[in-house]
Length: 202
Image 1 (tube, rainbow, N blue to C red):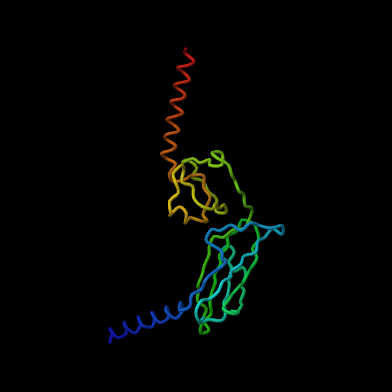
Image 2: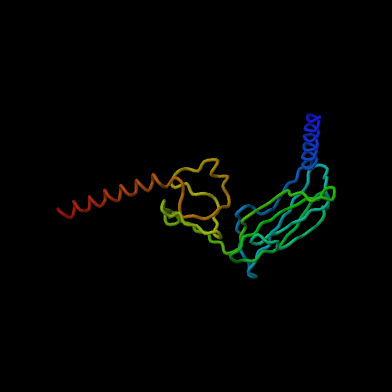
C-alpha cells in the first residue's frame, strides 16, 4: 500500500509539472537579476514583460507582482491575446531594490513562472577608453548593494565562453585574474626604481 502511495504521488507530481510546461513560453522582454534600469526625466523607468506562447496555451490569465524592498509594491493582471502577452509597471529611482514575479493562472491557481530579483533604477554611466577605463585593484573589494555593472572584467586575459554569458551583477573594483598582473606590475615598478637609482648615481 505504501508503495502504491509513492507511485501515485510521483504520477501526480509528474503530471502537474508536464501540464504546466506543455506550452513553450518565450519572453521577448523581461527584467533580469541585478539589472539596472536607467531613470528617465520623470525620475523613473518603465519595466516591460512581454512575449508569446508556442503551441497550445494551457492558461489565459497572468499576473505581475512587484516588490519594493521586500514589500508588495504593485500588482498587474491581464489576459493572453492571440497567444501573446504584455504587461508593464513603473519603478522609481532611489536606494531601493525591486523583485518581479510573473505568474500564469491555470485551474484558478497562480503558478510562479519567472522571477527577477535585486533590480534597481538610477543613473547609468558608460566609460570607454583604454587602460584608464580599465582601472582595477586586487585590494578593491568594496561594493554597494545599489551599484551594478554589466559583463565581467578578466584583467588582461582573453574572454572565454563563460565570460560572455555574464550579464548583470554587483559592481566591484576587483577582477578575478588581476593578482598575477598586479605582481608583474609591482616587479616592473621595483625594477624601474632600481634602474633610476643607478642612472642617478652616474
